[in-house]
Length: 549
Image 1 (spheres, rainbow, N blue to C red):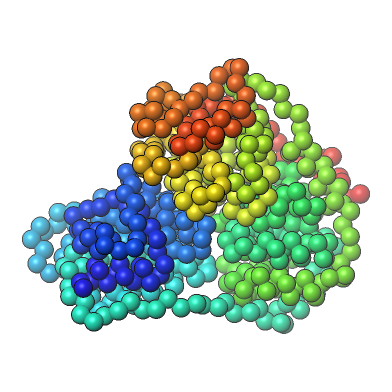
Image 2 (tube, rainbow, N blue to C red):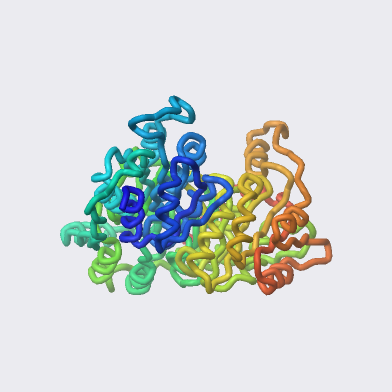
C-alpha cells in the first residue's frame, strides 16, 4: 500500500462517498487508488464546479464534501469554490497534487505555492510532506472542516510522497464529537434579558439551518409566544406558514419584514453570522440588546456586542431557554398584525400573467410547482432577492442560496449536489443568463450522471443586479448588456432537453411538464425586471404603524 492508497482509505474511514474533480498528471496515483476504492469519482468539466458541488454536499449533510484538482491552474480554478465554502460555513476538503519535493526534473513548470495561496481562504491548509503524516492530516482536516463554524480545509499531496510505501500505517478512526452543553448560568442570564424586553424578536440565521434545530425553534415560538424572522441563508428553519414566522430578510433596506427588527428592543440571534446580514443594517444606533445563541463566541463587531452569549450545542440551548421562559412572556399583538399584513403584501398580491413574466409571477409559479420538501437552488442575481422575499419556504435547506460570497456560477452545481443528496425530491436550479454561462460546461456532467433536474434560466441579456445598482446610483446604463446563444439549442447540444417560454405559455404548466419529462431539462424564460423599482422603496408608514398601536 502506498501513500495514495492510504489517503483514500482515510477518506473511506471518514465516510466519503463521492470525490468531485478534474484529474491531472500529479494526481494519477490518487486516481488509481480511487479506482479500486468504494468512493465514486465524479469528473467535472471545471474545478470550480467540483468545489461548488462538494461544498453543497457538505452544506446539506454536515459531512465535508471532497474535491480534487491538480497543481497550478487546477488549484487556482478551485479558489472561488473554496471561498464559497469558507464564507458560507460549508464543510469542504479540497485536495491538490504537487510537484515532487525531491527530484523535480520539471523545474518551475506549473509550480506555485498552492498552500500559501489557499491558506487565507481556509480554516487550515497544509502540504503532506511524508507518508506518516497522511492519517493524522486527513483526520485533522475533517475534524476542522466540520467543527463549528464549518468551512474549507486544503490538503496538498506532492507526487513523490503520493508514491511512498505506507508500510503498516492505518487510517485514524473517525470518532464522534459531542458538542458541549450551554452553561446554566448563561441560559438564566439570557432568560432575564428576554423577560425584561418590551418586544423581543428571534433572528435565526444559517447556523440554525445548518444544524437542523427547526423542531426546537418551533417549540420555543409556540411555548413562549416569541416571533422569529430569518436571514436568507436561514430560510426554512422556521416554516413560513407557521403562525409565529415573520418571514425572511431580503435586501439591506427597510423591507416589510425588517419592521420587526426596527421595533425590537431585544434580539435573540440563533446561529447568526455577520457575513449573512451586517448588524450595522439592523442595529445602526447600537441600541439593541442582543442575546447571542451559537456554537461559538460572537465575532467582534462595533454593531454586534451581545449582552449575553450562550455558547454550546444550539438545540439543547433552545430547549433549556424554552423551559425557562414558558408562560413568562406577554403576547405581542403588534407582531401578529404585522405578520398578517406582510403575508398579504408578499404572498397574496394579485399577479397578472404577462410576457415576459415579472419576478413575482415567476416566484409564485415555482412555489406552486414545488412541494414542501422539494429543493430550489439559486445562482446569484437579481432574482435571488425576489426569491428571498417571496418564496415561502417550509423546511430546512429547501431554498439554497449564497448570501456570503454571493458568487455567480454556483447554482447548477448546487442543484446537482442537492439531487444526489435528495434523489426522491424535485430539484430546480434557478440561474440568470450571466451566471449560468459561467459554468454551463457542466451541463454535460449532469447529463452524464443521468440526473432528473430542471434548470429555470431567467434571461434578461444583462448583468441585471449590477444594472439595478447602477441605476439606483443615478449613473447611465453602461457595460451591462451582452448577447446570448440559443439556450434551447445549447441544451440539446449537451444531450439535455430545452424548451422556451412563449407568450401563450403558462410557466407553471411548462415547469410541471419539464419535471414529468425527466432527465435534464432547461427552460429558457425571459424576465421583466421592471418591478425592481419596488425594491428601492423603504418600508411604508402603514406597516410600521401596526407595531406602534
